[in-house]
Image (cartoon, rainbow, N blue to C red; front, top):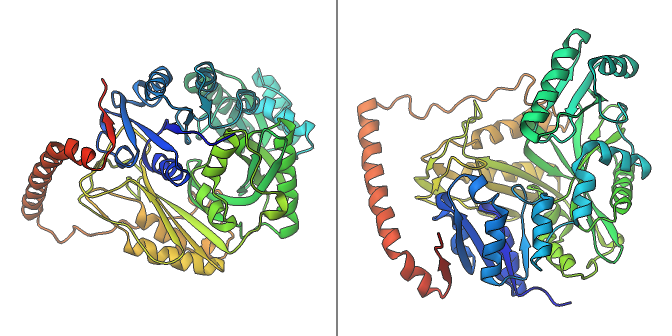
Length: 500
């Protein structure tokens, strides 16, 4: 089957740009969608067509699957790529695409459903012979049952909401008298965030590493892995820095993890790009299944750079019913890659910091890549994830990749908003990161970022006057851009659909 003629990208920001670029290289027309807050977003201007889908809040725009289907039919697209986040693992949306005769570029509905519930996923992994963390076999319905399981497997334990994610509905229990409050809190969060109070209990591994394996499957029964990524630098269960390969996984264990991940994918006849996430005990070198993400990951670029395989193009190809373009023996790891997530947030408090970007200069140079939607004058909205860019560097050795990243971050200029660039530089210089011994508890334990004192010597009146002049000039420039918007688009021969 031939590739698609036109693909709608049901996402925003850097991932929408990433998919749009893949489409252009394949000769496929791309269709962007945007909310009120994203009228001036770069992903809108880099697509071949763009359609307005609603107000700024994501529930009224990027999560409004009916509106997205309506636009897809209006634009006469063949397929929809959901990117990650938003509707990427939403079975209702995937079914709606199927009913509308539009290909969903992602796994099957059955794939998403089987991995969407952590308890059923764990049962399937056990059946496939994939190692799982000791704990309850199903949901834990009462405090008495929770106490019994905790005593059986021993403290510490972790209580998790079955439908949870993003750090919600999770509590670590180190003392028995903490169990009751943690149990009730997890059930409450499960109900409030995911409309499901079901929780389960697992043995908590102290200072574990978070290792994930990239897998791929097609409609012809082929399943492969593309080795691992280490994602242990986290705060509040959110990833900050990823690298590939892991500095802690021995090669024989790496191969075992890859084989286990492929067994997991085969167990559910998985189609497309997915990730099997493992908890890794750095002392015993044991690994246990944690969950499966049935979508493309934010950190996919480091796998692309180390293996030389374009995962987005492969997603599109597999969705078009083609077999995988490579076999397991073709996948090799070459060198080392690191990714840092650049966010519009305070590097000390981690609070989002939306606002207008005054100046922006992306780093350049050999063996690096920047996926970004930031540009001078762009206003980072408050409504979405604060990540505005990803910097990816490659080196023949890990040390070279780290040094190259430090150089790149030193070149990265973003003013007008606070960013976490200084946080990344601090992490990369830390002895525990340098020697690879860091774990998922790295940020929480004895880690401090010193806030730059760039304005300490500036007198307040002078600063306020300068800020007022800058804001006035920015406003004038924005008015000029809005006046020239239509002519610019006509000049490059693309369509901009401002549909209300």
